[in-house]
Length: 189
Image (spheres, rainbow, N blue to C red):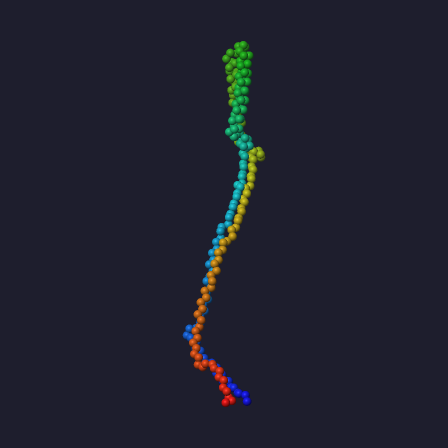
């Protein structure tokens, strides 16, 4: 006959008690360190000024008011003409005195010449002046403004901070009440 075997198995028995300290987990994410700088844009402005020219020399000329250079030239011309007129008048008066001297005129010659040279001369008088349409020359050149803007890129420096992770595990106390065991018993005996 064959031997008969019986197995006896005992399970483990445990007494588990959670400890007073439970597990804790703390997680913090610090903000990133962010530094942003915006350089100012480069602004370049170039201008050419407008120009207004008003030439009134034609008006002054019509009024009889001349520039210094024109005035000197005009007075020189007038002086030359008056000088030539004076020479001609004296030559004419000398000729007249020569012709009348032999005719017994005597003192009357000087009186006759004086009457010719004397007498009120009317000066033209005019207060109404109307300049011609071309007396004043006006010219205008417009100005320009050239604006150039060069934007500058922002400088961004970002430093990412690692998360702060704190973990405290829980503690469990245990007591083994029964050890596990396996027993083999021969029942044939």
